[in-house]
Each structure stands twice: as structure tokens, then as C-alpha cells.
Amino acid sequence: MPEKIFIFDSTLRDGEQTPGARLNSGEKLKIAKQLARLNVDVIEAGFPISSPGEFKAVRSIAREVKGPVIAALARTLPEDIDAVWEAVKDAERPRIHTFLGSSRIHMEHKLRKDPETLLSMATEAVKYAKRYTADVEYSLEDATRSDLDYMCRVIEAVINAGATVINIPDTVGYAVPEQFGELIRKVMEKVPNIHRATLSVHCHNDLGLAVANSLAAVENGARQVECNINGIGERAGNAALEEIAVALLIRQDYYQAFRTDIDLREIYKTSRLVSSLTGIPIPVNKAVIGVNAFAHSSGIHQDGILKHKSTYEIINAELIGGIAAQMVLTARSGRHAVRHELQEMGFNLPDSEFEEFFHNFLELADKKKEVFREDLEALMADRLAYAAPTYTLEYLQTVSGTGSIPSAVVKLSKGEETFVQSDFGAGPIDAAYNAIDKITGLHLRLENYNLRGVTEGRKALGEVSVKLEFQGRSYVGRGTSTDVIEASVRAYLNGVNKILLTAANGNGFAPDKAAGQP
Image (cartoon, rainbow, N blue to C red; front, side, top):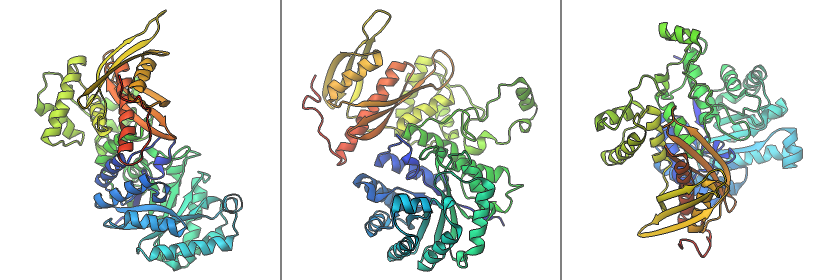
């Protein structure tokens, strides 16, 4: 029987540290529920001490998401550990995850403490966490640049103090596979009580080796892999969950001794959900889940694929719940056909929600005639990125052209009230954004703007994501339309509504007194 490799997903903690990938509590809960459907073993829900909003998000996940272990991160400080426990204590299976640097670089330049003091801090933190729960994970930050003998002393001590999981992070993505595998093997050999804990690894991708390092660690004794959906994370990101899970399956001939319990059919949907809510596009050539992963343009490749898929494909798109054969829908397609396609994509909507979706589908079909599965996916992503519509777009008119002054007229509704505003800008989109700022009283900084065509052709659906900065925080907005200016405005308005929703949930701010005035 193959030995199980536990999948620890840190998308909601380390993944959210990707610049601009700010998620609100509701978005984190949506992703956590989807991770449970993906059947990950552990969800690291966040870093509760970092902010009241983060604490509330972790607590919500702990209370509402069933199945996986719910973990949260703490420094080796009593107040951090207290905050983690208060946030995760209602989970079916709570875990406290605490960490401290172990490399000479971190000791001298970050922590400014000697090795023996840090060893004492580590064991005391584990003992303190153990008062709350039997499941305690300890991480040796920057392990791959640490002295091996010192690391082994720390590991032995924290296991004796009660740690049940020991994590060896390649914090700065410094390792290479052969070296990292050897490090894991030596830890397994040199730590006398290592059999009392699960050995875990957490690899960053600075050299593009995170997945390779993780797999090398598995071969040498690691039984938990910490990874993120789409490989997102700080700097160059983390090991990609989907790549690790699929590699272990596709190369069963080589990794026959190992297995995961990941439901691979949920990978595609999970990947798109994370991309939509974080506003981080998936590179077209991304392994396993990029749009080009199953595309073939070379004539030689196409000929081979038509004769037998295995000539140039090692992964079947259907394995990960992705796009394979698909029908083309039109405005004449009935509810049954649309619902069937959604179900094939893994979306099962209640009748009331489906009727709303079908209405949106018909509006799109009237505009572009032929609707493809990618279009349905974009419409679903709009629903998943939905923010309570404090403001709704009712009317938009823009003027632009050579020799003219770009301008826009925007009409928004807010409950029973309507507001109309016009303004000028560097272009029609900028002008519309200026008009929205006047209506809402929020003066936002556009940090990032991304536009992509969902499908091919002149009537393709345009998908826009924007990253907005307001009072030191970033928010992602998203919108779609066959009119890219309208999609841009809808994305901006989606971000505005998220900001206002955040304020309504207790993180208040003071917009201009003129807010909401025509």
C-alpha cells in the first residue's frame, strides 16, 4: 500500500503574502471551502495576531470548514499562540503552527539572539502551545541555510517538548533537489526521536525548484508537503500544489511508494477561484493548469494528438476537471444545456442562483452569439468575486478619440438613490474612474490593471482585474463584458464595493463628506 503524503495548503497564509493578493474574510472562507472539496489534509488559514480582520477570517474558517485540519501561524510568543488558539479552537481538528529562525543569518541580523536562547524559546513555545492542543507544528525558518547539527538539536528538543509536526522550510528558495533531499535524509538519520513526529517541507520557488525540492524531500522521508494553489506566494512563490499532486499520480511508475488523497477533479476549479479572488492571473504556460497546458499549435504535434493523445500529452485535461471536449452554446440553448455544461465544469448551482446565472448567460449570448466554456467560467468567476453591491452601474457613456478630450458620464445606484457624475481623464477608463471617485468620495490609487480576452475573436468577452490601494490596503476588483471599457468600470466598481464592505464589517474609514452626492 503506498504511503500517504499529507498536503498542507498555505494559500490563505503564505499565498496571500503575494504582493496585492489581499483577500477579505468572505473570500478566504470561499477558498477554504473549496480547498476542503479538493480534500487537502491541512488548511493554514492565516496569521491571527497580524490584524483583527485576519483573526476573524481564521475563526470563521475554523467554525465553518469541516474535514481538513485548520492551522494558523504564530511566532514563538505567548500572545501569538493565544491568538491562534482563540481563532482555531472551534475547528474539528485545530493545529497551532509556531516558528523561529535557525540560520546564523537570522540569528545575527534578524533575531539578534544566540543559538541557546533561541533553542529555549522554541521549546517553551511548543510547551505553551501544547497546553491548548495535542497537534503542534514547529518550523525552523531558513532551515536550508542553517547548521545541520544545531537544527537536529532543535528538532529533538521540540519533539520532546510535544511537537507533532516538524517543518523544514527552504524559506528563500536556496536549495537544489539533490542537496535538499540529502538534508531531509540526514535529519531522519540524526534525530533519534524523529519517528515521533511527521516531517514536513515548505519550499519557495526563487530558483524555480520548489516542486522539484519538495518531491526530493518526499523521496528522503518527508511525509507532509506545504504548498499553495497556482504556486502563489512571496517573491517567486511557493511549491504549486497542483503540480505536486499530479506529478505523484502521473509518475506512479517512479513514485509508486507514495499517494495523496487530493481530489484531482477539483484542481481546475480551485485554481480559477484563487486566481479570480486574488487577482493574480495564471500564466498561459503554467504547468498543469495554464490555458496552453493542453494546446497544440505545431502541425507535427497536432497530427500526433489526432492519432493518439499519448504522443504529446501526459495529462488528460479531464483528470483535473479542466476543459476537454465542449459544446458551443447560443442564446437559443436551453437551461438544460447550460446547466449541463456548468455541471461538467464542477459547478452545481441551486435553482435560484442558476436562474440569475442563466439571465447573465442570455445577456452575453445576445452580444457575442457563441458562448464557450471559457465564457461560462468567466461568468462564474464574476459570481465568486461578487461583493455586496453598495453601488451598481446603471449607465455609462464615454467619449474618446484623436484630438478629443476623453470624458465619461457614469450613473450609479445605491439602494433607492441614483447618482450621475461626469469627468475627464487621460483616457475614457480614467475619466470613468474619476467620475466614480467623485460619487463615492473614495480617492483610490490604481496599483495594477490587467485585461485579457477570455476567448478569441472580435466579440470575445473581456476580463479585467484591477488592484486598488486605499488607506494603505490593497483590494482586487474584477469585471467582465464584451465592451472592455464597461468591463474596466465594473472591475473598479467591484473593488469599491469590497472597500465599502470591509468598512461595514468593522474596519472603518472616513470618506469625503461629499461622498454619495451628485
